[in-house]
Length: 420
Image 1: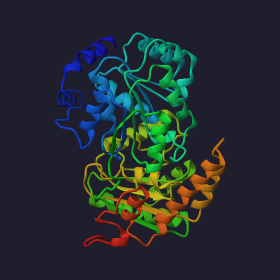
Image 2: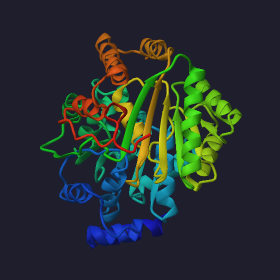
Image 3: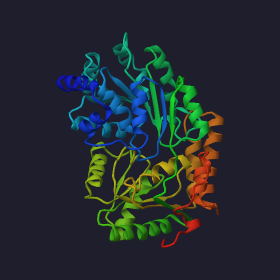
């Protein structure tokens, strides 16, 4: 660990392009990445709304690896943290994560590395910020940057509100107000404003990329039963597997039991599929993910726990067998298709159970205020409106996020020449 930290500290005089090539093997930045890297290197606060596939992690990892000190990354999902830390370590870079799943001996060793200044990137869940020992290690010092990934989670206007995110600003104030970079894939104007206010961003450098993905064909329909939805998913998946030698598909379902049921049903239809959800043992989850990324497994049926941070360039189909609870979630999940810029299909099949499932989840959402529940119900109505709209689906998505309607390049309401 010490040798890796020394190499990272020596790299601060590199140009961003040289560091990008050395660390990631990429010869040039994607759109939006370089301005964000520059703003962070200038020690500015940053608010970046970049769609799935835009390379958000590079925007904060690269500055952290070009400078001395430790960058603290607050992230909501253990699997996402493990994936990013594993990829950094595979490159010989000094990174670690601290979560509720971290064994005590690993936690102690990580805190010692942190105290000795041997980490460049430390990923933590927001709940970890309240730990007494964690705060003690930071006493008298401050992070080089405080990065808030999936920043919409801080906002009660957002679709995945996490109360622990609200304490990030308190942590920042306690430890010297380091520059903050807040990043997420989807956020309405109200959510963006709330993120800035809750994190107390100071004259942030703002990047708000369009949510529109011209290479994705958007299709939605209502079904009479879950079985009918799975049958239709099976037809679409088989079409992709036949026509695309390396093409892959993700099938999202709202519940853990639904993920297992969908995978079993697809297997009976002759489609080799596996399921993935947060209730599985970590080794089993990792095994499914590794087989999917390597191409040995081409179809995964999953809850929303699957997909964040996964860079699979050949996902040609993203099916939703049942609607998500918010359009933000749907666009983020569907956007995992076509990350290579090639055509992809986002298929949403509503089932009669959808409203009841999400209404139950909203009621069981823990200590939420009536206002948060009201907003959750409003997001659910907007999501259901997407299914039933007679307008262009791409225009519907754009207007929801406060953008002008784009020229449609593919949806079932504006069926384009040559589309099935």
